[in-house]
Structure formats: structure tokens, C-alpha cells
Length: 119
Image: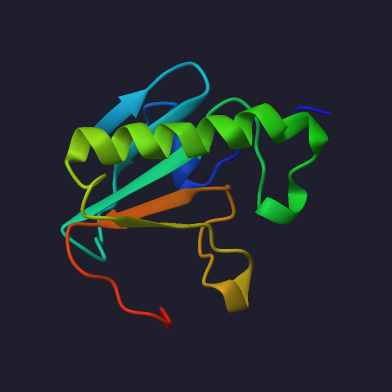
């Protein structure tokens, strides 16, 4: 069932073909700064081992990985100093949801007050 990392920009970052401003990395996930930040802090978290195009493509097999992404987000927020003031976690899904790279990823956005609704 496991698909290899794809050829999207995120797959190329995982393979080291494109550099990134890395914030965190382990065997499961990679966190790096977004090149078009939506706030003073904008970090992306991506899974490394399995290509999951959208959250709709995640399965029960991915439950631990999805939990790992959330725990990594909290750790990144602490290390970036935004855990107490607040931040937003976003997973866009498909075109109308604003997804432009079809490799599951989570945005951590903070460092300023964020309005609601978002867009």
C-alpha cells in the first residue's frame, strides 16, 4: 500500500534536491519554513515516507503518522515561541480548499492575531 515519495516540490525537498529552511526533521516528518509566509511564523509539516496526496487519501494505516504531525506542530510552535500567544493549523484539501501541492502537508501559522473566518 505504501507509495514512494512523489515528484512534487515536497518530494524533491524530502530527497534533498531542493533546499529548505528546516525547522525539524525525524524519520517520519519534515518541518520547514514556507517560502511565501502568511504570517511572521509559517512552517509546513510534511510526511516523509509515504505519498499521501490529500487528507482524503489518508487511511487507518496513517493514523500514527497523522498524530505525529499534530504533535510535531505543537513542538514547533513551542520552539518558535508562539505556543502561548496562539497559532493556527491548516490542512488544505483539493482545489476549492486551497491545496496547490498534492502531497499532504500541514501549515503552522502564527506570530500575529489571526482573523476568522480565514478566507
